[in-house]
Length: 151
Length: 104
Image (cartoon, rainbow over all chains, first blue to last red; front, side):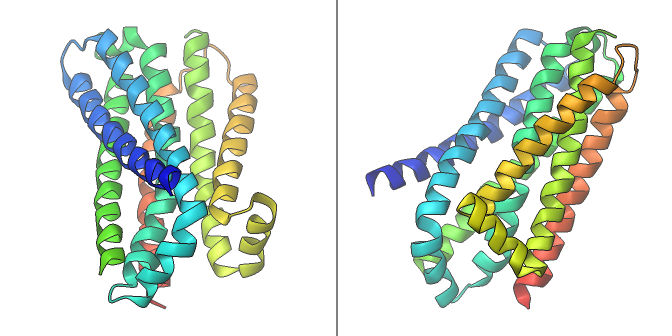
């Protein structure tokens, strides 16, 4: 149980760190002259946070959620929390690590384009906004699922 | 354009194809139970199967892209924009799909 709870806590914290760092990336990229060093740091934190959240979430989800949490939600007053929210959450989450990886490589590959305010900078900012908004929605979905399990 | 831009273009293409693949695999798995059972059988859990296939497809397409894209190719911005649109559409598509599928 201790490892399972630890994995759930790490999953949540790493996901939140990923969301916060994606927001920091977005703000950094919106500056007229961004600080490349801090963008690199935030992009690495964003990517590895979501990888950690992915791995620990997988451990908890595969070994515990399906057997112990999902039946409770389905038998409770809000089965939609699993059927709709969890099903959508677990699948759209898979997009985030790939987009975060592209942002990280983009920042390391194109510092000249970012400093020169060229179109790649704008594209990386939009991708950071996508990761931030989707990550925040997934965090809210996690709150809804936890609430349904406690009913 | 240098080798770093070539890598950026390759992994952007790899991510686009991986996201489309996850979306298709997920919907096929929900509508055709034997496919979801096959994922469970091979990867222990259907979600682990989707995760593993996404990573394998990403690596393969990125590798092929790295061979196909030339250093002079100037489509990095185009591929980043395509990734954004594909990720947005795939997210909306899966949310709408599970909204209707979860109610049935």
